[in-house]
Structure formats: structure tokens, C-alpha cells
Length: 207
Image: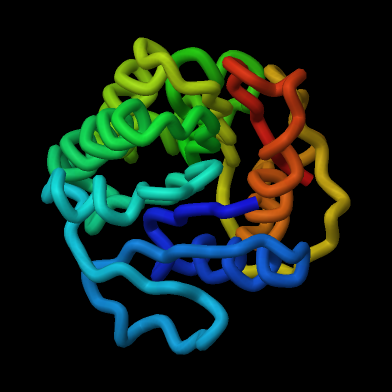
């Protein structure tokens, strides 16, 4: 599958690239700073997600999009990311790319009902800016014509790739501080790419 990755230079993005290559996918990474990517087997397109022409150029010939855009600060809203998602959706429509898997957060309104007391009482109030931005981006994606899946992790760690995690619309946490490794989040995003049962669904993921 030909996959365009946004947010490729982040830690979860790096995991997604590494795992996607092992699965035999053909990758294009969209990045403001291509010098952060050193893999010869990945096509890199330099650009900013707020630039519609750059996003559209990268979208040509793709089969699917992995969107892993992340905030610069966990305590400030970042409207450029919502603008970027709108540009991605417009480019997908223009180039007839149907599939998107978007990295969101378990703290969004639709996802936090059973995510545990720590997330609801501590993380959501503390990270209210991140939550609000994710909810805005999800709203644009859900209103679009693409076949989307929201992947909503809880607390992210730099732990190993285990492929042993639980996911679904609402997952009961087994720990006071539920977490999941970035490597396993990347695994799930790639796993559901061609899983039609996950289309138009939000999936919590945790160990």
C-alpha cells in the first residue's frame, strides 16, 4: 500500500515508518524538516501542513494517509494543526484517496467515558488545550467523505513494540495509570488500515 504519513518526524511517526517498511508498504513522509529523516527507502516531501499546494502535491498517487500530527506544546492550542487536517482532507478528496487513520487522544469527549479516573480528573483538565484541538480535528474528519478511523491512546510511553494491547470503542483500564507504548500505537494504526470493520470508528488503545 502507498501510504502518506503526516507527523513522520515525531516519535510515534518514526515507529510508524519503521514498522510500515517492515510490512512492505511504500512510504511518503511529509515533513517541515526533512533532515530529521534519514531513511533512503522513504520518499520525503518538504512542506508545512498549512500549505495546501504542498499537501496536494504529496497526496498524488497515494492509497492511504496516516495522520500523526502533534502539538508543539501540551498546554497551548495549535490551530495550524486543524488547518493542516482540513488541507489533508481537501487533498484526499481532490486525489480520490479514501483511507485515513488519525492519531487522536483518549481524552476527547467521545472517548473518555471509561478511560479511568486519572485521565478524567487529572489529564483532561490539565491538557484541555490538547483535548480541544483533537476534538476540533476529529469533527472535521468525521464530517468528511473519507473512510476514517480514530486511534485514541491513553498515556504514551517509549516502551517496546509488543503487539500485545487492547483496543476498542471503550476499554476498561487495568491500571490506575493506563498507558500504551508509541510502538504499539503505530502497530495498531497500521493493523487497521485495511480493516473495514474499523471504518468510521474511534478506538481506544491501552495495555
